[in-house]
Length: 413
Image (cartoon, rainbow, N blue to C red; front, side):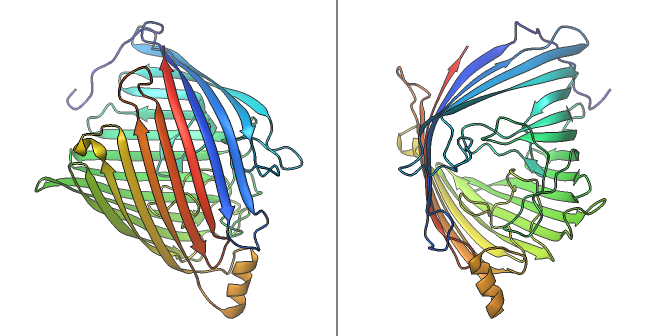
């Protein structure tokens, strides 16, 4: 049949692959406002992840299995037990636990270029972007189907019923992100449905539509357009993302009324990439998304997600790959975000209350720097080192200075 991709067959053990991933992670967030309930969050931990992925059994329909085990070891949590950086679970007195472990398994079935997965999932989709910014990824439990049988078209659909957060050993119910008090994050659900279409019109243009619904809480629609065009010695690129969110079912989290547009345009040539864009949150409420996940917004940074009610922002950035000057493996990133017009009506915190009393709007800014290096040869080949630094200031929440240092190494087997 024209436009249908060929079947793919493989072997369960013959095509299996495994790896041990080591991540050493130091986290420090220093709050700059006296009104903050915690002056500092500090964690240092070692993560060890064992991942084994089978191939597929032979035959028209192939079956497989993926297994993952994770162990986290506390190295330090500050002079006064100032944990809470999302690396380790916390005990009753707020200190980080000394160690913890967890596991995950995913059964998979493949027919031609369609794959069904059941069990542990970490979707990286516009309406559910699993957070992987600590020792271990956020893991959901459920079923997902991805089909690429029609050339240029990726179809995704799934149902999830619970989540294991980055620093947790237990599955728990799904929630909406609280957004500084804008939504009731204590309301749990055991069903999240999602579906999406991504169509590659040609190698330079992709169109997307995705839909999702958290049972009895909220539903969302996403429209996306991504393009890149050769221009001079490099290429022009752009990405436009538009989100619509409304309450759903029994409306257990209350009113949800949000439209958000997030854009990014830039130019890339040799080792240089310059980019920037505009983002606007509109409607009666803040940007709505699943608790613990990433926003999939260009404005999101290390300290702030820049997604509060009525928030408007401009962002700019610059990336440089030092391979262009003879230093392969070394990369630098700079970003700056400036936002205003934040509506503090439904936000908690003393700063937000002061704004409401004055009838004023909120504003914030954040400056982000990252430098990363991956060893290219020798006995330490593929050893990765990364330092991330961010400074955030706000008149409606506690500003913070944050540093993250990560050292990663992967053993393949």
